[in-house]
Image (cartoon, rainbow, N blue to C red):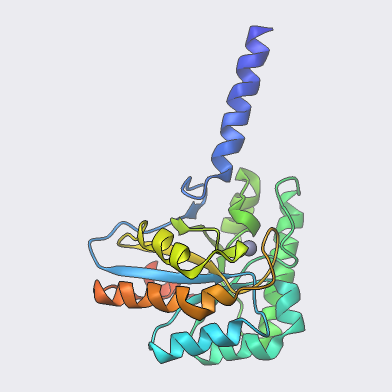
Length: 234
Ligand SMILES: [Zn+2]
């Protein structure tokens, strides 16, 4: 009986590790470097009202970011996706409909990611390499098959609950408290999972304050392909 309980505890422990974004299972959550480089990433878009505002802010500050787009949103808002790409940002894959993939067979996970890549290709003519699983949740078997098919799985080391539209000051403080060299920041330009539709606080002040702070500390904003020194598209 005790042995069974111990085994269950070990099993739960292993599964919980897969939930942690900083547990690198065929994935990476930052790079180790002395350089002041940082990657801004945006998840869950493209969104017709929020993404263009974020793009305006990035353009104003002359910085590039990585957008992990959801396949169904890319299908519904191709013009927004096209603009992301045309303005020099990197496009990544964030699954087709942002469902949990924890209990899916590896082949189903791969199909979902490749289907999303096909939708993205129809719009920008490129197949993304970078993939971020919904909620950052990975499994050993899912991550393994994606790596074998040349996808690069990226989580993060700096995220706060901006998806609940927390006030800009809180958003700013939480993000800057976790800034690191080689870090990966996640913000949300779309509404999936737990997130609310209204993301006004991010685009009102939060994002600009974060950018201004990082610039004042001489951080250089780079896309993930540059951060990992590899091609962003297949
Ligand atoms: Zn997401």
